[in-house]
Structure formats: structure tokens, C-alpha cells
Amino acid sequence: MTFPATLSRLTLSAQKGGTGDRPGDREGEGGLLTQTTTRTQRPPLYKVLLLNDDYTPMEFVVHVLERFFGINHAQAFEIMLTVHKKGLAVVGVFSFEVAETKVAQVMDFARRHQHPLQCTMEKE
Ligand code: TYC
Image (tube, rainbow, N blue to C red; front, side):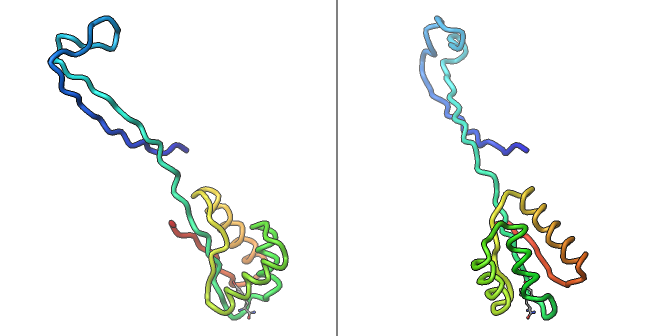
């Protein structure tokens, strides 16, 4: 996956463009030099959200956070409680592909265990 670059072109007006000594010089073409700067953009990031429900066991959610997000037990328990009390929490921020994979892994794991746990992603 590649990300777009921002190109900005600065045109320098000059009566004479270069000496003609170097291959890039364009003497005899109106005396204009162009300079292009390239900025590589950062890839967009995506928040992965875990949603509360009334049925998924708390210990299952803690296990999901440990297993798929590498979160230690104490922090996983805290995040689970935040979701339980507030309705949702951000459990990580990733590239599109990684976020998509985490969401799919969590949704599949929950489905296989017949829990209604929901996991989604949104652009940061
Ligand atoms: N609310 C659930 C319960 O009381 C626990 C829970 C927490 C469920 C977080 C989902 O993402 C969740 N068993």
C-alpha cells in the first residue's frame, strides 16, 4: 500500500534560465525554472472501538483485549469496565489494514463463542 504525495510546483521567473551547462537547464525556453517539492503524507489512522452489550461476559471481553490487542490483564479489566460503564471505548489506533484485521478477528471470535460483542473501526 502506498500513500499519495503532495506536489507543489514553484515557478521561478527569470530572464535567463541557467547557463546551459547542465542537462537540467532549459535556456531558450522562456527563462523559466520550475522547482517541485514533494511531501510524503502520513498514512491515515483508524480507531478500533469495542461496544458494550448486556450479554457478553466481562471475563470474555478481558480475554479478547489480552489476546487480540496485547493489553495486560489489569489494563484489559479497566478498559472492559470503561466500555461497560460508558458504552464504548477506543482499544487501539492502527493503520487501515491492521484495524480491519483486529475487527474481523474479534467479531469472528465473539461469533464462534456465541456472544453478541461488537467491534468497529472509524477514521481518526
Ligand atoms: N456489559 C457486559 C456485562 O455486564 C460486559 C461487557 C463489557 C460487554 C464490555 C461488552 O464490550 C463489552 N456482562
